[in-house]
Amino acid sequence: MTDQTMPTALDLPMVDPLPPATQKYFDICLEKLGMVPNVLKANAFDIDKLTAFTAMYNDVMLADSGLSKLEREMIAVTVSSINKCYYCLVAHGAAVRQMSGDPKLGEMLVMNYRVAPLDDRQRSMLDFATKMTTASAEISEADRQGLRDAGFSDRDIWDIANVTGFYNMSNRVASATAMVPNDEYHSQFR
Image (cartoon, rainbow, N blue to C red):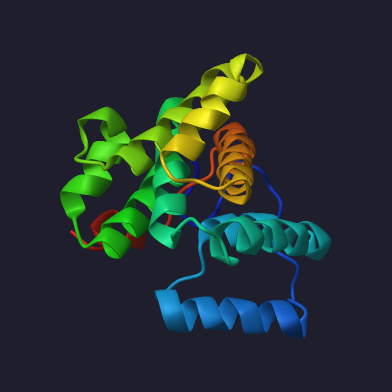
């Protein structure tokens, strides 16, 4: 575990002062979220790395998609549950609670998505994300067809794969660096 004043166990201080564009982004986070997520602080030792991370996050999580923002957060939590990523479970569990308005759903996804009251579309999406996380080399056309049969387009399948891949990468970095979730996440939307 790291000191709560440091976002990770690594001694990589944020650039000081932050470039104006980065400071503006952090100010928007403070205004909208009441905090700057530690994952952003952790990447702010190198502005190019922070920019790359936020560009990828914004693309997979916020860009136009056939997946709702809640569905993308559900993938993030399910993947993070398999990977036992403390940071992402806390942060994205809070997002699921917020977006769904259901604190129980957030907890179910953190523990085991299979106990959650999901529709067939969501269950097939999370089954695919699970298989991609645990046995990606075993994914076949039958798995993609299962998503199509549940109502996903090929573009949606691309988005499911990219969200899943992003969180598999992010989980490993967060775990390897002992990234600490912001305290605020723990009590949000309960």
